[in-house]
Image (cartoon, rainbow, N blue to C red; front, side, top):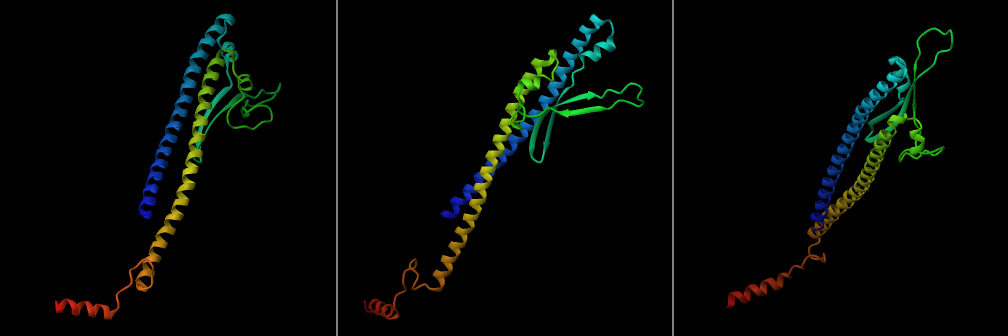
Length: 217
């Protein structure tokens, strides 16, 4: 009975781990979709801002340069972990008279606030300082969604870790139960008349007496 109970528990835990893995994959796909949605909406807002500035400046190139928004969103699944982070992209300015082309400078927006390295999310006022006015609402909405996905993913990782620990304990105890059952059976077979779980065999004289009585009847 103990063996059956532990075997059923192991099956249930394995099923639970597969469900958690599927939920993690769904969160990963939702994060990727969030990134695509962010850039699609940002492109629309950017074009509107370019059109507005072009009307003011009467110069589309200057309008594009002024509307440029350096804030970007990154989604990466690496080593079974989901990362949703923000980074900026700037063109390095060349010194006067310098030859060659300018290069791109990419910087990750730090987690948390100040010196805090809390990776649970971003300090929103600090994050929004990197956004243009026309995209502030978009960045705020996307980061709120991203924070929820980070929290959900972390919760699933924690839950999976707890189930995995219990599964390892169950495997250890299950093996102990099998070994113990095998030991008891072997002991009972080798000491049938002495083992407390086995009824003692009748004495040969008692067997002959019973047989004689039956024949006599």
